[in-house]
Image 1 (cartoon, protein in one colour):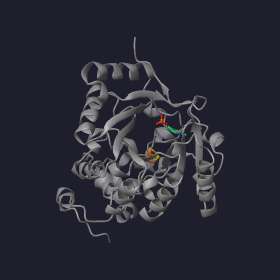
Image 2 (cartoon, helix red, strand yellow):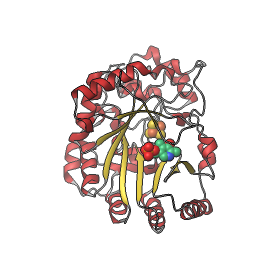
Image 3 (cartoon, protein in one colour):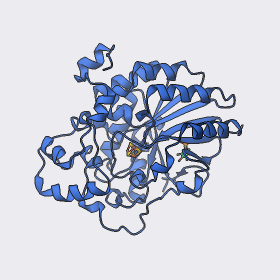
Length: 343
Ligand SMILES: *Cc1c(COP(=O)(O)O)cnc(C)c1O
Ligand code: SF4
């Protein structure tokens, strides 16, 4: 077990288990989730069917931030398997981002100029029901040691690559030992300037931000940016705040991306409070994504005109730096596609 050296964090959260234990102890049984939250068991059969297509997985500390007996809890709504996922949904596909076409070798996606995305781990600590990951063939993207060398060679051979993005799945599911070595190898490539990490772990298992993690981040010559993924202010409790404060102190620039999700954050108050709470915890809003049209996620869709209206509201009520960019992902474009919200 990892010894915690930060008394503040323990006092605030009562967490004494390591992140590895928290990951091993995630809730996977719908019945257990229903019982912990005192939810009406009539919905359990539907949850069990949906979970047989894409399993339920949610860390206990994330469940602890939910309100018992509330179906509409915005955190529960992100992880609860529902019968609505099961029918065929026209216009919703299995690979909406066409990632399969931009995969020059296992574990590497080079779609945008100047940055490559590495699939460091197919696993996550949470299964978000709206995620394209529910269908992505991660088994084929689990590189061996020799393949990692090919990935490094690919980056080294293209001087236009100035930023390497560690993604997944969730890259922080990998061990600090593995990540420290990977980052040190990346840092040996002179034209790479920045390391970016896309992870939901600082939010869902905040004890993942260990001293070892902070060490490989701050010891590297690479400038580091972490893009966390938080959809609702209720996710940002004191334990998350403590983890984010450590990252900030280690010199990591913190940004957030959210997905606009019906029943989770598709209202003015939720988005305003999210931006303000993020800033209080040292994080700037980066992207607000329209939902990727993935089979099984149609019930989360917010139509584009409502999305624009919501962002116009944020623009009229918040400083510019607290307004995330509304974007859509389109596999044929050279970047995320910004959506003009002006009338
Ligand atoms: C989203 C994404 C990036 C990063 O895009 P930014 O606009 O720089 O955040 C890079 N590569 C791939 C394949 C992506 O999907
Ligand atoms: S990749 Fe991100 S959005 Fe998808 S399941 Fe993992 S944590 Fe959730």
